[in-house]
Each structure stands twice: as structure tokens, then as C-alpha cells.
Length: 280
Ligand SMILES: [Zn+2]
Image (cartoon, rainbow, N blue to C red; front, side, top):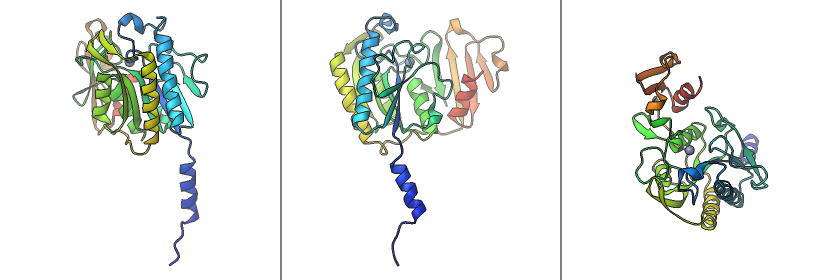
């Protein structure tokens, strides 16, 4: 019997191989090398802008070196006031502003990466670790397990079949993603000895590590699996005392008020529960 590949399958395979490889980089401030104090996380601080820009651009270059066709950089720290179209890598696109509950992940990037990422709240030896809000949120839990930005975005990406392939940040942030995606590539640019006490590499070294890590990660695209959070999901958020729940909290769709500072949402998937929490 003659062996041949049916033409529709051949066309599909060609289309898949020609598919644009688009990477979304989620940036933050607290996990950038050299950022160890709260005052340095202000976008107007003279160090944060050049330090984060240097790391983001190193990651862009690394992904391009590794074969990415397009790299989108989200300025995710404190209201998108840190990165600028004037200084972002000329081949990158800058994503500015709030992204809503979905984080634009419905655009189905080929991969997601974190740059300048910090760990979730309440983790020993994390540098300025917090879960979405250091002043507003005490902890967040998914099915009883603490999560932060890394856990939520990694699972949200996974719900669209998108893997998280790279993270740069402090050692605690690296450990947090490694527990979910052991095969990802990492650049640990500083070590927390306490919340505001850190041992950091130089800006120059962090850029080398990040560019190299991003290039390696891109080369391994396809081997790094999306993280899938099994459903059903209970999402619990405990606010800080100053952020006690408003009077109408219990009237929100799907909301279950646990106590004065704690609210719970249930969904068939993480995306469902997260949507209930984030959309009002
Ligand atoms: Zn953050």
C-alpha cells in the first residue's frame, strides 16, 4: 500500500509549523535585581525604570534569539507607569493598562513568562512578597492552598493551553513557579534574607542571566507543559483589616462571606472562580 500524507493533514501541519510564536512577558517591580526596599518600587524612583526596562529588554532579546516571532511586554507593576515606548526593545510591543480578569490570555500566546516577579504573601525570605496587593490582601487560597500572582496567572494561562516557560525574580519566586512548572527555565537574580534584606546580582549580570534563560526557554517550547488546575475550584481571599468587606459583599454573584475580611467564590474551573471574583 502506498504511503502518503493526506493533503488536508499536510496543510494543517504546515500551518501549525508556520504559526506565529508569540510570547507574553508579565513584568513586576519587586522581583527586579537591585530592588530591595519599598521606596524603590515607586515607578518614579530613579532606579526602578532603568532596572526593569533592562531586564524586560533582555528577556525580549532572549526570546527573539530563541525563535520568537513576536514578544508582548505587559507593564504589570503599579498601574503601568514604569515601562515606556521610548525605551522598550524596538522589536517588542508594550501592553499598558489594566487587563481585566483574563490578562489577555484568551489571545492564546505560545508562551507566558514572568520578569521581575515576587513571591506570594507570607513566604519566609521572600523580598516584598504579596498576593496582588500588599496593603489590601492577607492571603489568597485555591482549594485551600495559598497562591499569589504566579499561581493565578500560571493556571489562567494553562486554562488556555499556554505554558509558562520562564521566570526571573527572587529565589522565593523561582521556588514558587518551580513547584508548579518544574521544567520551566529560571533566573534567580536575588536572594531574600528578610523582607527588605537582600543579596542581589548586578543589573548587568541579571540581564545576562535573563537573556540566556529566555533563549533556553524558547528553544524548549513544546517540552514545557501548560499547568492545569483541576476543578472544581474554591477561591478564598482574606483581606487585611483596613480592607474589611463592604456591606453588599454577600450580594455579589457567587460570593460567600466567610467573616468580616474573608470572601469565597466557587467555580467549575479556576477561570470561573477568578471571573466571579474579578468582575463586579
Ligand atoms: Zn505583583
